Amino acid sequence: MAEHTVVNTEKAPKAIGPYSQGIKLGNLVFTAGQVPIDPAIGKLIEGDIEAQTHQVLKNLSAILEAAGSSLSRVIKTTVFMTDLGEFQAMNGVYGQYFQEKPPARSTVQVSRLPLGAKIEIEAIAEI
Image (cartoon, rainbow, N blue to C red; front, side):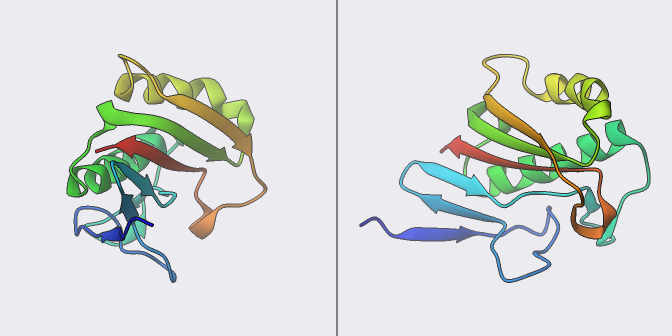
């Protein structure tokens, strides 16, 4: 069985529980779900679903880069939203980050997310 490696970067929010920001295994990296926390201040950002989606994708990008990957190498995401009525707005921002070869994606509505976030996204990417 292949050894896995913990991915950690100061450019993304610190884990708020017993989990890793990301795990490298073979030629893949698996990220923890990211909520829109600004890593510079360690707090959830203010703002609408567009602002929160931008922050989440910046956090994911930082973790992927620390693992030797990037958003362009993402093969699967899972998006958790508290209101699917905001799907189109989220999708507009999401599409700015995944213009070529967008990854497979699942999007689900959940009742609550950590810290009152509107969105959380996790990703699997190639290294």
